[in-house]
Image 1 (cartoon, rainbow over the protein chains, first blue to last red):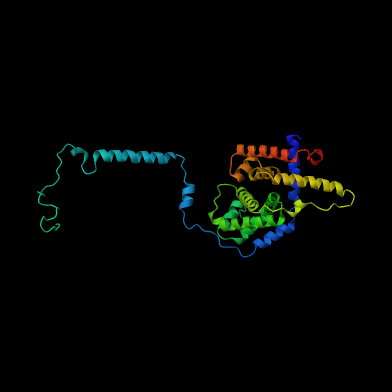
Image 2: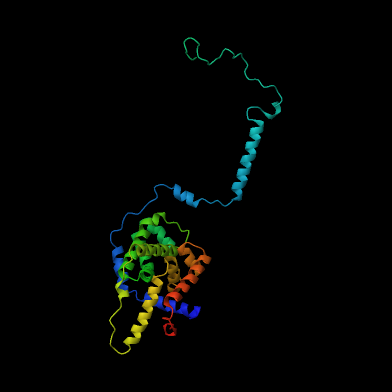
Length: 114
Length: 183
């Protein structure tokens, strides 16, 4: 038996089974389905669907935004936000007053903390 | 009003029972036929079809149209059928044979039926995925891509399943099948 003959045989046999599905069976199932239906499962927690929908393909606007953020982070990290660019060479002043009396060590006798 | 499967599913997701009935009427005959082909038992096929449509109803709010509704529903039915076959391996009454009808021409019909039953038994003995691929391709007339969508596999894997399925059928049927079955 050739491949074509076997395929035709399968088609004939399986289609014959399909034609045997009667309207009565369809009506029976439809009748069972028309009864009170169970409660639907709603999405209580969206994270699984969010994760499933996550697209890992590169999106160029996002890549550009990421590159901008990286560049900005580099500049801020190098220059610092606390000193303007024109005073980068000026000596660094930590405080205007003597702060040496401010200690946070516990008292040697009492153990009390300031 | 848009009455495509996807639009109806969107309405079913909001609890629209009318849309669910429309969807059921549209797809139930085909799904019942598919379940019957796989299970070869009418009562089981009706149970599976009912369960599949109940799942359509209960899972509608979670359903997302990443694939065609029909493909998804076919997958649900095939999986339910395979589960059921795995659970219960009983012998069906249909496989036990029938009394020969003495009327003229009945013997030819009985012979054809007998051979068709042998073929159905041979299909039944195939591994589940080969059986599903054979039934979906030759019974439902699906393309290899559609079968791949239902079985959640690649097109080349479907081709392999079909080749192996047909080899197994040839081996199982041996000398029994001949030209007069091809009509």
